[in-house]
Each structure stands twice: as structure tokens, then as C-alpha cells.
Amino acid sequence: MPIRRFGGHRSLVSHSQIPKLSYGYTRMNISRTGYRVFSANSTTACTELAKKITERLGVELGKSVVYQESNKETRVDVKESVRGQDIFIIQTIPRDVNTAIMELLVMAYALKTSCAKNIIGVIPYFPYSKQCKMRKRGSIVCKLLASMLAKAGLTHIITMDLHQKEIQGFFNFPVDNLRASPFLIQYIQDEIPDYRNAIIVAKSPSAAKRAQSYAERLRLGLAVMHGEANHSESDMADGRQSPPLSRTTTGHTGLELPLMMAKEKPPITVVGDVGGRIAIIIDDIIDDVDDFVAAAEILKERGAYKIYIMATHGLLSADAPRLIEESAIDEVVVTNTVPHELQKLQCPKIKTVDVSMILAEAIRRIHNGESMAYLFRNIAVDD
Image (cartoon, rainbow, N blue to C red; front, side, top):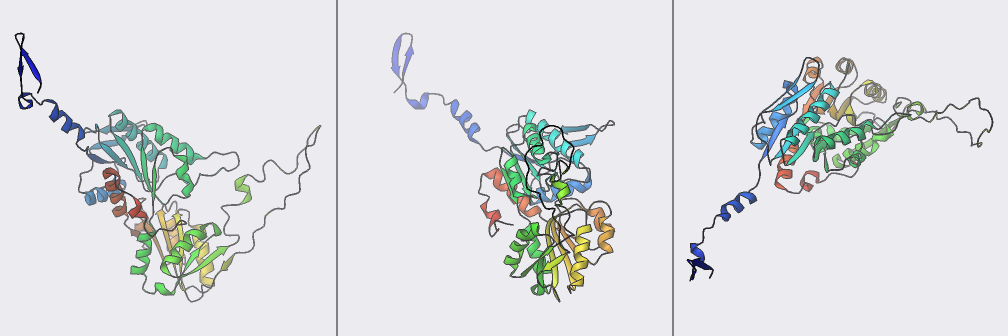
């Protein structure tokens, strides 16, 4: 028993008589912190996905105001306390990509300085993902953006179908790259009555692995297009002609290297039989649709009687809706990772698949510290 002194005398006191003031403080420390979900964009089109996610989670969207001042500076005002909480920032990328990036950076920094515990960015379509390779004397902008997000205070990112999976290596914090393929495959099975008579098509050899993953899960054949239509990876774009082949020099002429033969792509060909079939073109991003329109015309000439395009991110820039409407394409199916309601009004061929379910489940699992493996079940390595 503890000993208590009274006026120089000692007496025995039981433990039950000692005030237990510290117990309540300990219980308060071990209680689980909450989480909040914010939208980094105040426009109606961009907050639609955020509202769907919060409805599935059963929480309210965080109170914040994001706006542009008269000089186009981005300002963010967070209207509630976030101290010690897990904060999820949902940012869909509209046509003004750079403004959306600044909104995300400013909001992340505002939450960081407001003592948020963790700041997780939910960025279904990661911008600048096509600029993940060196081109001539350019730069790898995707790496720059990853560094900016980390500096602003983000500690984790949830995204979907990165253009190249190796982009995850640009970040010094965890990246969960979710897949839209289960939703698009379900759409094929439910909405295309004769899908058993379909063939999966890769419009370029670089897209063959993704298309093969779809073909194997649907138990369908695979066709690959190759030729002049695939001009995005041309020699003039990757710096192989720099420096010029001939130049005037003085003094030492350098080493004599073997003469490099110029690449010449063959006329466009389709490896695989698409005659009398439904052709389903698979890709991750559909933005400028010229290549897709050209591919559809070739497939029609080869005997395909219906042509579908399945893509995760429907950017559909410029006059893409008009070109799709006037083309041989029967339907373009994209997810709601990017707002495209205006494009749907211009072109009824554009259909949308909702992926808010998997984003909401990812948020719930990350906050609760649960495994993310369930979200990647039956996902192939090349998907």
C-alpha cells in the first residue's frame, strides 16, 4: 500500500482512495480520429463525383470555398476544423488543367497548415500523365507534379488507370492505382447483347497488353492494329534526329558511328480477323479522337459490323464529340473520372460508367487501415 504523511506521521492508504485523474486523459488519446472529405473544385460538374462518393460513405462533404480572385489567383477557405483528422481531397480535372492543379495544391497546403493528420488526394485522372517520358530536350512534367504534391502536404494518393504504371515511382509516398476494367467489363457483358461475337482490339502495339487483359477475362479473341496511323511514337517526337545528321565541324570530327537506318512504318494492318465481329477498342485515355476515328474506318473496311470504344478517362477535347458523331463508331464508353456532361449533350454516342463505388471503398479502407488487396482481385499485371 502507498504511504501518506499527515503532520509528520505515516499512515497506510488504499489504492481506491487515490484520485485517478490521469485515466480519462489516456482514454481521450487512444480514441480514433475522424475523417473528412473535401472537394477541391467548386464547379457543379466537378463536385458531382465528390457528392456520389460522400453519399456512398454516408458522410457530408466538407465545408470549404474554392474560388478565383479577379487576378486569377486561387483562394481556398476551409470552414471547419481538421486538426488531427484524415482528410481526403477529391479533385476531378476539368478542361482547365492548370487551375485544377493549383486548387489541389493550395487546398492541400491549407489543410497541412491547419494540422490535419493525413492528407490523401483522390485524383481519378492524374494530369500530365502522358508527359512521363523524355521527349527531345523537354522534361518529365509528371515527375515535377509528383514533387509539387508532396511539397504541398499530400501523404497518399488514390488514382485510377495511370497512363504508365511506372509513374508510381515518381512519388515518395504511397500511391493506390485503382482499375476501372471490372466496371467496363461488366458494361460489355450487360449492355452488348452479342458480346460473345466480339473481338478486343488494340489500336496500337503499345496498347496490346491492356487489350489482352480484357480479352482473357472475357474469353474473346484479340486483334492488334499496326501501321502509319500510330504516329504518336514517331522518331521526330523522341529526339532520335537530334542533333542533325549532317553538320559542319572544324578540327576533330569525332568517332564514325554506324549509319542509323530511318524507321519506316508499313501501311496500316490489322493482325487478327475482325470480319463479321463486334470490334471493341480498348484504351486508357480518349482525348483527340482522330486516331480512333481512323481505326474505326479501317475496322469497318475489314468487315466489323459494330465498333465500340472503351476508355477509362474521357477527356474528349476540342471537337471530339462532333467527330465521334460523324464517324463509324457506334458507342464510346468512358467512366466519370473526368466531367464530360457537355460532351454527352453534343454526342448521344457517349455513355458513362460510374466508378464512385470503388473510390468510396478505397477511402473507407485507407482510413480504417484495412488491406487494399480486395480492390485488386482478379486484376492482371498488365491491366
